[in-house]
Length: 254
Image 1: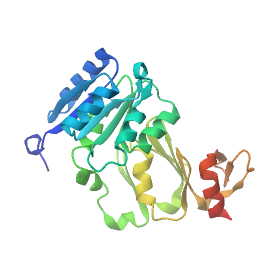
Image 2: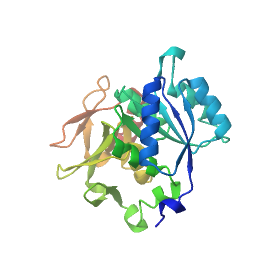
Image 3: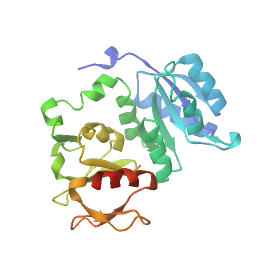
Image 4: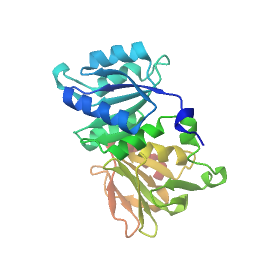
């Protein structure tokens, strides 16, 4: 197991358009992550872009709203989305926790979405995930389980859940809620994309919304094409599909 002395320092760029908040976030980073090396503190997206290009950080902590520039973090991230020259791990933090922002954060492959005010322990957890992609992959340790089971680690236990027992997975409040056939709901701090990677080879699972993945085994029908409601077997009720994902769902069902 790595000790703090064995962990290579990680270069970090932090950006928030409010100076006091920026300093507070940086102070928290230094408190919870002794191997962090903050290379730049930025209050604009323009400064952030220059800092990323200059320092080639391992991690970027990024607020969403930059009102003075009339842009958001996602405008900046579009610059790097298809670039091979800049590869960094992303942590989004924001006082705006609308579902659309949450979904967009993980669309850009954020490691974590942290609501403001930032919780110290959740920040520590997010930064620990950025230390090494290899460590994160090893969080799914037993290859035999991955063929037919979802590995879910919570504070109290590690769960190995048979794919056939999963009704749906939904992202909400920066967490993933996994609903099981026995009506149990397991709550994880991992994002939905993390679990989507585990089930990607199982054709029964379809992403029907940015925040919802459903197991076709539990789909009983659709309410109508206008409402795009997905009717699940009793007692799981009905959930909504997005317009973009509804056609894919119909192709799977018909």
